[in-house]
Amino acid sequence: MREHLKFYINGEWVDPVQPRTHEVINPATEEPIAKISLGSAGDVDKAVAAAKAAFDGYSRTSKQERAALLGKIIEIYQRRMGEIAETISAEMGAPMWLASAAQAPSGLGHFAEALNLLNSYEFERSMNGTRILKEPVGVCGFITPWNWPVNQIACKVAPALAVGCTMVLKPSELAPLNAILIAEILHEAGVPKGVFNLVNGDGPGVGEALSRHPDIDMMSFTGSTRAGVLVAKAAADTVKRVSQELGGKSANIVLEDADLQKAVSSGMIQMVTNSGQSCNAPSRMLVPRKLHDQAAEIAAATAKAIKVQAPGEAERGAIGPLANANQFQKVQALIQKGIDEGATLMAGGTGRPEGFNRGYYVKPTVFANVTNDMTIAREEIFGPVLSILPYDTEEDAIRIANDTVYGLSGYVQSGSLEHAQQVARRLRTGNVHLNGAGPDFKAPFGGYKQSGNGREWGEFGLEEFLETKAVLGWGG
Image (tube, one colour):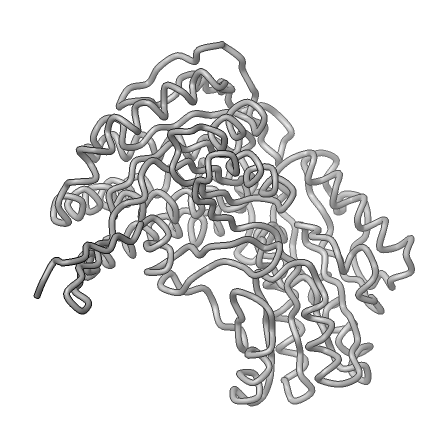
């Protein structure tokens, strides 16, 4: 079992102020694979002090200097891509095919996009004799989740480095090993001392101290809505900027003119990717009432064909375990809740899939005849569980889709792109995917309502880390 008991602060690996250890569990085996330290407010104070001291110098570096730094990070990241994928697979259960094809490369994609933007972004412009300056927001606190760990670290760290911010990162204590690799990559690339700092820990011990800290200028949080509320409350007393990407309960509207077989089967497959542990997963499938039974049969057949396999042995398309014991227990309870509330169980159900007596594996599950007041239609399940809801009219479908506290993503399937576009305009969500469109690193990612505020990815994500200054009387 590996031990990573130090934190990366001011360019060095240092011992925690108060020693307290935590075991990292492999979700496929339920066995510990590593031991880390859990930090405290004292560690946060040291890391923030380092970031604050580094800000004045790093914020005044040139675009060319920061571009060269990002280029070096990308070069080292590419060299260590395989190690990153293996680490993510071991600590949060992603099948190696997914870790290699999406989880690890997504981090590289954000660094590459940040470099591309930095080379073209104009940090100054004139407006009627006033000079508009875009300047780094300051010292940033980052709290990142376990489900897409490197993706969420990179989409914060990369643009912050690009614009001249300094930072303190607290990754999830349930999947922290990838963050240690990122720290090693940044160190080897020559990131100046204090610019990037890593403190492992839990929410009460490190997350709250980071959010409350008077010398943190901005908090960027990705995680549950419940935890996001706590971050915002802790940050409020110091009036710091707070950017959040939170939960979701995204609707996948299958319109009457869609290819039903393709729309339903692809929607089911997209839902279970990463074992359903994606905040933007299309977990509510809305289908015309007259096509409901046919859609339910297609979804059930698709679910039954999805393989559940150990991460290291998984074929492309197979899913692995959920990432941790708490998530496994939550998903099992919500599946039972769906049964108890009268939804029709078409595939899957409670318990582990056949052939597994340990590991946090869940059966790909389909519920039909779901109404939007059922728990499985309201709460974010974060597992491979699809709820199929019938609708009577297109207006009804849009109403049901918007009838949620969340607003992260939406999906529309139609035989006509123009028809899909019309529906997309009426969905109260930060993203809408038309006819199976995939992610776009240049497009903004974030939500409406209780799915958060602010945006990540691309130019919109870069600008989250900038303040706007007007210098009047500049001339010109």
